[in-house]
Each structure stands twice: as structure tokens, then as C-alpha cells.
Length: 321
Image (cartoon, rainbow, N blue to C red; front, side, top):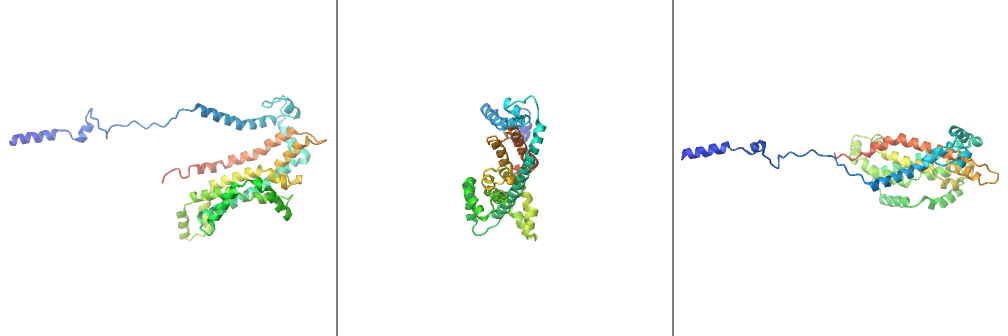
């Protein structure tokens, strides 16, 4: 009896355990089965989507290509050659020189006027949007919901609907035909204010502001030292939107400005275009095309210089803490 029990105990002890079975040759368990390495997702390219994207790209770049090519032509080449190919003579630098010196350099005057409207109008609109959006996002005060409703309503109203009331108001104040008639309306950007409101609510942690206040930091110091660096991507976005809107603004200066000395580039190029339809006027279509090309260069440069601020904010919140 004792010998039988001893034999069974030895047999049980000699049996491989779970870990031994897992490491034994040919042994397979669901828990220790070797998984294949994770392969990155490689979706198959969509031919219809590729075609649509290509059409959008061509539609976007074709006017720019046409503008660059035709800025190298003189008046005859512009009218007598194919629009999407160069003429026999290349007059690019001559066209630029004539554009900048035509009519006593009025193009330079219009360019400086546009820069004035952009710096004062778009810059001021960005500052007000950042301050207002931060205050609405991080401070509680009576009437906050009413302000939110007003901002949303202002975003929904097109600017052309306010053009006539704005003109009448500025006319009564004697501000028409002055730079203030363009700068002051440009300071109000409901979309920029709403964008900064939403961005500040997510980009600036309330706990961080409370910690700064506990450490004795004032509100202005907290804003400039802590909140403003976090708001930089949103600030650059609002600045670019405001700059493009002010740079390309045509309708507001059209009804406010009558003196050609205060024209922006949009009105100035339109005035050159109207010369061909005026009795005794000189057709300067080559200068119009070259001037249009020079008009978009500053915007492209600004976009390229401020692109890194956009890229720095693209990944904000993408990593789980």
C-alpha cells in the first residue's frame, strides 16, 4: 500500500507543470501564443478621391499659373498670345518697374495704404479678439450668455448687410473719405472673437491660472506670461484671417473712399482696369496683371513665415496625459 502511494506521488511529481507545458516543444496555449507584429494600416488608394483632389488642385493653381505667365508679357503679348504659355519676349522685370513707377508711383501709394489698413485694422482686430475671447472663456460675469448670443448673431450677419448703415453712421460723423472709415470697421471681427473664445477655453487650463494666482501673480502678468504663449496658435490663426479679409477688402473701401490717394490695392487695380473703358483712357492690362501678382506676394510671404505657429498647435491635445 505504501509502495503504491509512493509510486503515484512520484508520477505526479514527474508530470510537467503549466509553465513546463508552455515551454515544452510543440506545446501551444492561447495565453502564450506568439502574436504577429502589428502592421501599420495601409488603406488602398481611392481612385475617385484622387481624381477629385487632382481637379481641386488644378482649379486652385491654374489662376496662379496664369497670373505668373502673363506677368512676363507686354501689352501686345498679353492680347495676342496663348494665356497659359509665354510670349516671344519676356518683360517681367520691365513690367514690375513700370508698375511701380506708373502715374508717379501711385501703386506704391496704394500698397502703403493697404499696409496701413492691415496693420491698424487687422492687428487691432486680433488684439481685441484675443483679449475678449480670453475674458469670455476664463471669467464669469453677469450677461456672459447674452454676449455669447450676440457674438453668434454677429457671425451670422454678412458684412454687406451692414455696409449702408455703417456708411450713414460714418457720414454723420464726418469720417468718410478718410482712413478711419476703413480701419474702425475692420477692428470688429465677430468670427475672430468666437474662435479665440473657443480656443482659450480648451488651450488654457483653469488649474494653471489658479496656481498662478495662488503664487501671487496678478491678472495681467498671468495673461502675458502664462495664457498668451498658450494662445499663440489661435492668435496667429485669427491674425491671418483678419489680414486676408482686410487685404482683399473691396466693398467697404468702395463706398467709404473717394479720394484715389487713400485707395487700397483692390480699388487701385480696379481704377486701372476702368481706364480702358474711359474715353481717352490708357489701357494698361499688362500693369494690372503684374500688379495683381505683386499684390498676392506679401500674403504668401506672411503665410510662410507664420506657418510654424500653426504647426506647433496642430498636435495640441493629441497626446493623452
